[in-house]
Image (tube, rainbow, N blue to C red; front, top):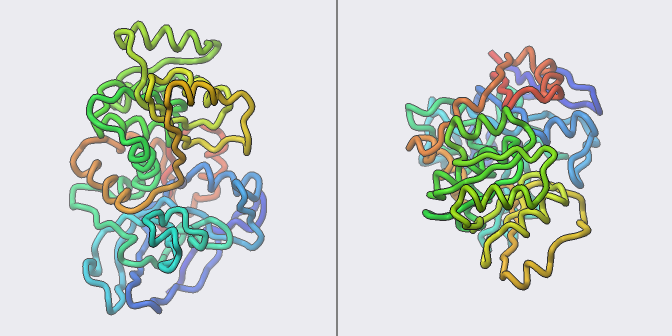
Length: 351
Ligand SMILES: [Zn+2]
């Protein structure tokens, strides 16, 4: 048995390697045959620059963290999964001893072993190990590709849980990249009656409206904050957003989101921006009692919520996969990602 893997050796240098097949040593672990993996902006960032945020690739690393697969072996203590089950793989396992884990914020655990985040290998390989409780069994009518999409979808779920999106909310989403689009779709699924998404790509805005990820879309190319305000007032009966999901990290967008929120509004930072931002409207935060939240990856039950949203048809993620590549074409897939034409590229698992 072998374990073909797609390995980032250094910047712009990816290739295939045959890695050892991982062995189950902890009885709570499960071996999964990976069947599909989406390419994420962070994977590509490592490929382009060798780093992402504060993480730097020093040793060759297997790429990929948005995966689903089929259970091929289970440890002796595994209770809820069996060989042959189809599963979505939550790709980050925290230390079970950390304070963050114990306090219910395992996504913030400093000892997190996260796929394709140095020094940990990713999931773009044939066999991968995860503990049972970081796998979500897919219902029969949910495809493996939909299972792989649970990863970016869970980022959208977590951000909406952070601001407590509920029925009747009016949500502003800035940025229609994969995360912004899915966060908007989750806001709709959680009951937001109005969701406005902003971007400069007409294609992505049209996608958001077509698949009901948003009720309103506005192209901000060449537009100012007051143009957006006028649009909202006209289309929302003079009412302002109760929540804002910032998915760009662009300083001007951050300020705009805070400025456009209704009094008592909730703001969540999802986009990765510069380490500090000039012109942050802190006076508005004080005067309007805006609550500012952070959001990092996903935490307990977010993956389950994602699969439930898909299974319940509360969000249709199928159209999200715009391009498909075989495992052998994985290098081409990474190059194609750089052209920015795809919403989500899916790479099939090795034969
Ligand atoms: Zn991702």
